Image (cartoon, rainbow over all chains, first blue to last red; front, side):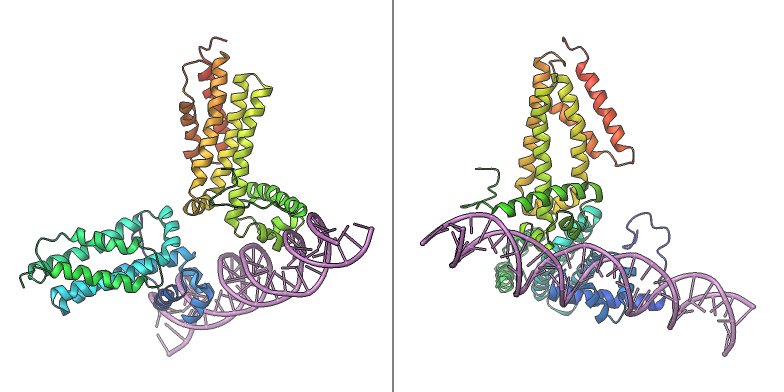
Length: 198
Length: 198
DNA sequence: TAAATAAACGGAGGCACCTCCGCTTTAGTG
DNA sequence: CACTAAAGCGGAGGTGCCTCCGTTTATTTA
């Protein structure tokens, strides 16, 4: 079962080259717009900035929610990918810390999309089970790698770390929310490094 | 705590006579329109048919959901009221049957409003606890009266009856849904009358 | 009853949504 | 390369949403 298959998909059909290009641009631009203006960003503006007509946007994404879902899945994709990249390019503990900082961004997006996502969940119930599984497994491998290399203490369960980060999500969104979350991550890392052998 | 008080309401403020009149008309018309055209009925059309400007509608109901909520509460109100009226004007078992038929209408409405109501629930969590309590207590008194008068058997728990009706709600909305539900109510009444002493 | 004031009204106007269909581009085929 | 069918494009236009503010009306006060 590929990632695309939502249900009984017999022929996913490859898009024509120009169609694919436009679709990608739309998602790209939508991601920016949703991030800066919220989920209520104007679809016509998104189409315009992507350099396509509004009709094209609607052909690809019949409702706003469809577009939101794709953007959200892309976000998750990026987050998981980042875990691999960071692990390759940094010492294990640094990779973990950087990733958690990025995780904060992800949560921020998720919050912004929350209302739309709620609607999606009534339609497409696999969305959350899909994504939360992938995210937590990305975190698990980072934590395990860091523990194995001795950069953080070994007696740590990755799900505990995830749980600690969960506080970020439920915390109220005051203006200083982001800074506060950043500090929380640092604090958490200090705790993880404390007593490490390496 | 009155029915109006949602939270910390120090002064409910009585409306000016014309304002109250307009508000009532709006709710009246909205109820009809939602019933016939669904929750997406045009607000401008509702205002027009109520004989007021769109601005007036928005002053009273800042969002569509507010209007939906009021209409829904009115529906529940009417349903509970009907229980008392029917009990007064009919033999206990007939009252129960008529009320259950009306309950089917109520469910039909509720289904129509479901999407909007879902949104409301994230905002105003007392909505369901308020209403479901009132409805089930209306049913309880009808069942108890019918049982006490010997028109239906005495060994019946009203919550079981409610549960049986619950099947109506979850049933798929085929075109013949309403007839089917009507038959279900009749069937249920037969069961309730079977072996009654009166 | 008349004047004063606060409350309410209403609809024009600006913006976003979304459909529809004639035009353009792509990807095959000979 | 030329041709064609199918796929895709785009934006005009009709509709609904919602705000804003000048005008009207109910109520209070004298």
